[in-house]
Image (cartoon, rainbow, N blue to C red; front, side, top):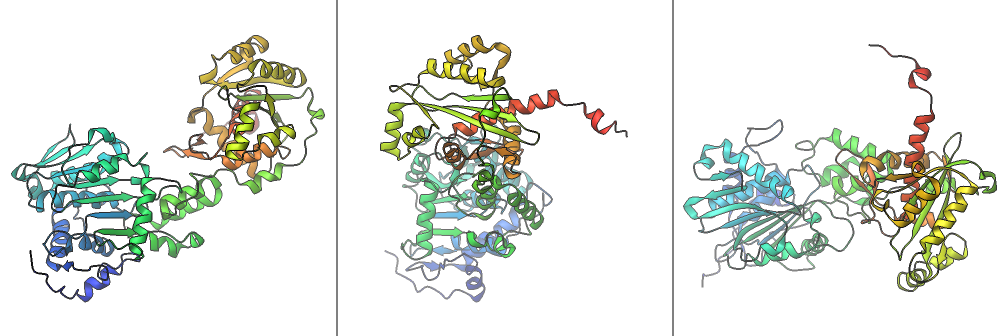
Length: 548
């Protein structure tokens, strides 16, 4: 049994660097672990002299660590147990996007692969999908290709995304997210990139147990904030915060947590505090543009907080501001709408769930909206008793019509829609393309004609434009909805998803509760926008011909 040594004094320089680890002191929590300044300096020198940037303006230049990165990497490799192995076995690297966590993870993978001097090491980078897991590998492979000191020792196999160190029979591989194929691994280093995107805990658990046979294994989580929900990321974050705060004593867990104070999220000083690479890999100009977008677009505020400031938001991306929505709550004179032109959107639920029809009546500016909802009576009772959602009260207020039994009565809905079409001048009704073959939709075609029942997609192509337009209408007070309490509840539930181009559409899977009335409104609005374009004058008539 090795004799316990006195922990040498940590130099003033390293004490200063360790103060850059937010709220965490590796010295006070060291217990019987020893500080090895040579090991810390070695990993920093190795990264800065061996690793080159692969992408961007600094491509081909040495990867020079910022002080906060030196503190993290130095702590990870400089603290040793009495037996000489690494102190830390798990690191939770929680930092907003564009702060260089992926490229730093690549340097750590290469350092372990070439410098740990153990035989048969297995190193893996994993993520929720193969493309995300490949990002760390792409940087590592590029570093190997650019530096002879690495390319002489390591072989890169692009087709399998593998880097091999033949002298130690060791390898670094990208793996896909299916956890059931990962049993039997013998992992020296596991990098879980963007832990917040993991659909469940299974992959992380399988990879964690794969390290059990190694002398000094390391699990590295690199991630931005998750939503406020049960998840493996939030479980790890909770544990990391407790280790940081001294509530849990775990000398083997290194928490690196950069999180903004939500009450000061608009303060640029707070941006700098939680974005340690602001001004290096992430520009202040970029942050200011994203902040302005968050201020102008309520749906983007939570995205900005979560991805750029690491603030765990309560829901995915709240969309419409209820204060703005309530501006359209003035009562609607339903009788005055008789015979008026309108567009319909029909969101069909399952046989035991809500079905929603929205009618939009174009005004000189904006629209007036009416909704009709149907639900099986048994479902209404079940929702009230189980989920405390009072469909029965909404039924008493004539906001939902309850159909007998435990299945939606589509014949009744068909009759209701016929009566509605007789009362108003419904030009067309949009139906979900996936349900266009359903019996009710076929019946509506028989009743209204094929040209008046329009298939409508639920993807970005069909939904992005009306989603953007509805937000504009609500923010400008140009949608009069009469204060429908059921639809207001649905608006409060609605979460939107964003594609890489910045387009938005509702996300039923992430929304807290039912949003059928919102979806039916967007379907109607999508058709109304197309109708307005078809009916409007030529652009050349309104502004003349532009020449270049």
